Length: 162
Image (cartoon, rainbow, N blue to C red):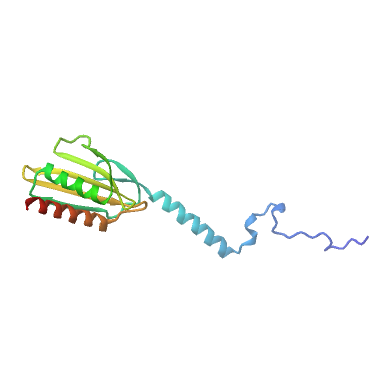
């Protein structure tokens, strides 16, 4: 038998010599992998709870998602119009009076086109009612959907006068 120095040679960077498993990747590839994990970590850290107009919280990224309008109507009229619009477009999930408020504030949660919709109706004074509509997708806000629902509430209130 010949004992040659190359007979049973193992690579220097293999895991059996205590080296990292990432020896397959070059240093630029290692940096890219690290950057990808860092970006994923930052995305998970910044994602969290977003406050809703109804006083509850939902998960997602904080983005522009609200539309605020005021109408010269009573709270009951505006709230009834909001419920009718929600029922025409989706499914009403819950109606409630937010904690630490009076009976002049009402809120609801609904699902419209796979989005969560939060509506808050509150009296600013006896003749002015404010409606805040918030539309949330699974990752962020959808201000276009909120505007669309706001327009439909306005049309519903306008048709009540006729």
